[in-house]
Amino acid sequence: MEDKQKQEDVFLSALLRGNRIECQEIMKEFRKTNPSIIELYEELFMKSLYKVGDLWEYNKVSVIIEHMATSITEGLMNDLFPEVMSLERKNKKIVIACVQNEEHQVGGKMVADIFEKNSWDTFYLGDNTPTVELVKYCDLIKPDLIGLSISIYSNIPFLIDEINSLRTVTNIPIIIGGQALIKVGVEITEKFQDVFYFANLESVENYIKGCA
Image (tube, rainbow, N blue to C red; front, side, top):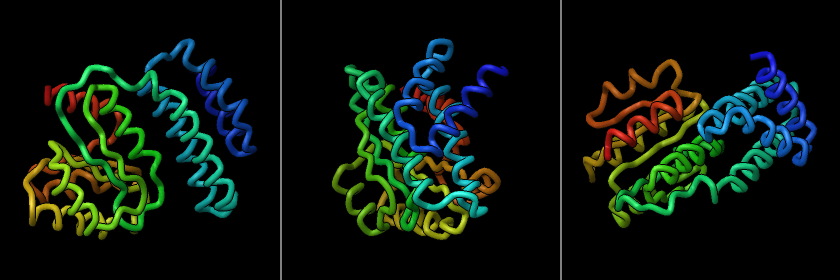
């Protein structure tokens, strides 16, 4: 436990200094004893980015540092994608997007990777996806599932609006997640039919396996 915490602390420090090479080496060391992609994403990447976000919120680091930390983490995830990507396909499709006005996209990308790992075709639309465009794209792709990611609490009205807009045209199940929903995720799902909140990547993967 102490070794893992030390790795997390050193990784966070390297992120804040913008040292991508050091971050990569720490990731490799972490994976020697923790080969799980989910554990890497949650225990090293996500925890570190949450701490960076907290530092930015309290004006202890600049937005430039936050963007740099996010960019490094996304780069490491891109390096891992050949390992994440499953060659087997299940003929299942999911569209994943960050809600309108939401500029934090790493969490959504992590969820997309978990679906790819489990042989789904993933259409990841990235940050700040306009509601109208999301509805149009889902009508075009006709996915089996829609995923919405949200990190900033003040963007919850956009989440509600997107769910309502999607529900006017489709009954496709919707999954939601992100740091903004830690306290209100379950409450939001109770207002809609076939909308599910997941607090972590493990619960996402369990859901995927239940869809098989």
